[in-house]
Image 1 (spheres, rainbow, N blue to C red):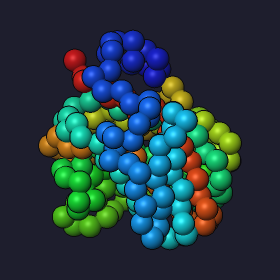
Image 2 (image 1 turned 45 degrees about the vertical axis):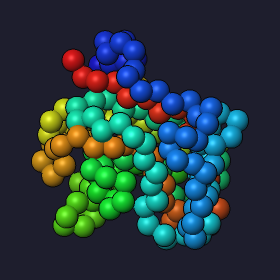
Image 3 (image 1 turned 30 degrees about the vertical axis):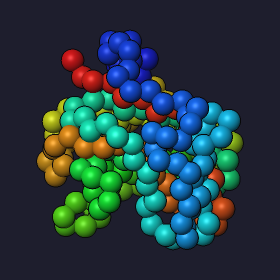
Amino acid sequence: PTLADIKSALGSPVYENTFTSGSNFDLPYTDEAVKLTVHDGVLDFVSLGVNYGLRYQLTYPKPQNFYLEGVFQTVSCSGLDHYGLVARAPNYADGYGYYAGFSCDGQYRVQKWDGGGLSTILDWTADSHILSGAGQTNRLGIWMDGTEIKLYANGALIKEFSDTSLSAGGHYGIFGGAVSTANFNFTVSEIAQWNLP
């Protein structure tokens, strides 16, 4: 099914954030690696250097089975600079969760961070449904139903896989990682969550 089909079948989202404020994501936030602010209806992620790892920010719901979608716009990026969605994070502090991301050069990757550390489930893979380069808008969707996980790019199902590591409910949010561009910058105009039937 297409992304539009999934959304119409699921009805109205139970959570939708179009970033009129930063309160649900506890923003603004700045540290040695990133600056995250909300302005003009977007969450603005700006890196302050490269190779600081995954930098994430979560919001409060903790669903177990759901469909989650984020609308991302690249501003300044290149190569494997990447951005995406975090899901099933058990808490705000330890970084555990699934990390499904797109790179600036049009690839996807899925990682997990659990008690065994950070590991890669699906390594970087090119897909024609992901728009590459700066100044592009990509919709990233992730479907999680028990151990079944599906990844969507701009309306297309691009990968299905199973994983048992993080099966309980958890927080979700956004993340980014600067690899090639010191001032890597992307924005998020919307994030929404639907419960599964």
